[in-house]
Image 1: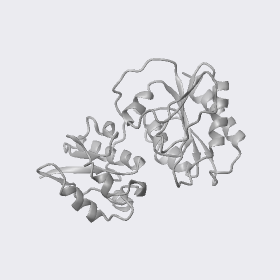
Image 2: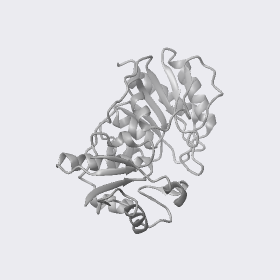
Image 3: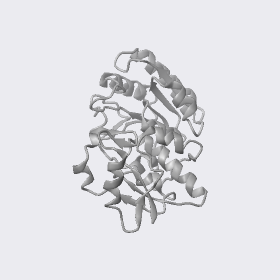
Image 4: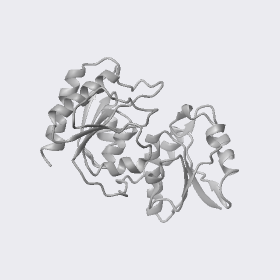
Length: 278
């Protein structure tokens, strides 16, 4: 039987899975993968083949309960049985497929190879600062919309020769229409395809947002990145796999912190590390 991995993870955990599959390929063992829509870019030139999850999956499971490698309320065995009964002929879900973070730590640590993902479409234009105004239904890492409005406005004024672009899905990011600066572009809701985001990195000279998967992807793509959050060592040292320039504003309260002080640090970081040294 052929081996199939399964990417129904929260996005940040997809980066670990694709890094493990890259490591396996380097060892001469390429496997197939089944993915959520839009994640195919993470497995190009890594997986032997890439398949989409069955459309029925979104009816049978509640994606709002997505958590790390799994879906809350669905055991690993239930998910394994579900997908094994729906895979293409001669495939089975890998015996090392993780359905919780404990298995991941036991099996994958030391067996991951992190590299930048491949560009597909050549982009040309003005260089950009990407802002990821994260907003989930229930998530302590949501920063207030008022913070992002002020951030985008100040970035536009500080870096008039660059485009400041907000990005994200319509269900996972603030739609910031309150800024009228001529160098601001609101791309929230334009695409949920990771390949488009990866391609955007060709023009990106900086990225900013609360600690989250898109910011980890920016670091993987070599984009100088500023994060706001509570896990500085994890994102600056442990999981900055490409040793990209990174700034970090530590806070234990995502809803109440010194907006102006934080934004001043972001502007200083962008000017020092992203723009003027290029």
